Image (cartoon, rainbow, N blue to C red; front, side, top):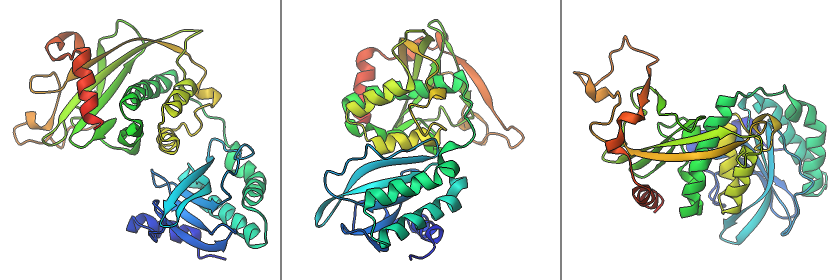
Amino acid sequence: MPDDPIRIWQDLEQSGRGDGIFDVVSRSSGTETGYGPARFALGPGRERRLLVPCAQGAGGKDLKGGPKLATAIVSYSSANGHQPFIDILCHDRRLDVVFAELCREVLKRLADGEGPLDAVIGTISDFRELLLSGVPTTVSRSEVIGLLGELLVLRQLTGENPDAAAAWTGPFEQRHDFRRGTRALEVKTSSRADATKVSINGSHQLLAPANGELCLVHVRIETAGSGSLTIGRVFDDLVAAGADEERLRAGLGALGCPDPYDETWNSFAFQLQGTDAYRVISGFPRVTPEQFSDGHVPEAISGLKYDVDLSVAGEFRMSADELSEFIEEIMK
């Protein structure tokens, strides 16, 4: 059996690199599958993962994920070419110990001669109650609206470059929702067509990257019983447009939505009412540290949150062509 999985994941996290064999941060478990050794790995958001090599063309229709566990067939390249893996990823870090035991059981079954798919499917079935059922999730309408707005902007970015999901930084506690190089996008979503006010969190949210540019995108949607916009449908649009499904799921999981088809995240449907964009430059109504005498928000001020009325920011509004140009630049 391998060393403690938790220790291996911690080592991978601290070093930021694996054994360099595949183009993913991973390390061999030492347990062979017939297609190479199973590997401990990290997800885009440093989630704990197990990669189990499998045959070319292996189907994943019998792999069942859930709110806390994602499964998929993925492929990574090495000096010897591409190798498909069964990817098992746990979204909930509170379950590290349970997930480590699941991985040990998968490796034990592999060592006993079970095929990769049988070993993974059988183990997940045994651990289903601990990893998949959980407590039903309660999701507010405002949470759905906020996530949907980001996905709609991501859909627009993906239309320019299928690798746009790599620029979706907001879920991973970064300052802006999207960033690539020195350009960034911040997304605010309102649930009324005539809404003009958006809420800003903190003094850095409308601060552009150093020597860079920031664009504020205001998405306006409204609830509609037969609306075409739901989390699941936009997710499908993104995957169909070539977005990296693994990165998408990692971002969704970090925002509390590990399953884009979960009923709790798809109980509301919307229609798009409009999208406006603004250049956040000198003169734009905002609060930033540089506005204070010493360049810092006073220590006595915390939890800063304020509203910006975009109806008075018309001079900063971007035309459709200007927004398209900005998106082209950020996606280069």
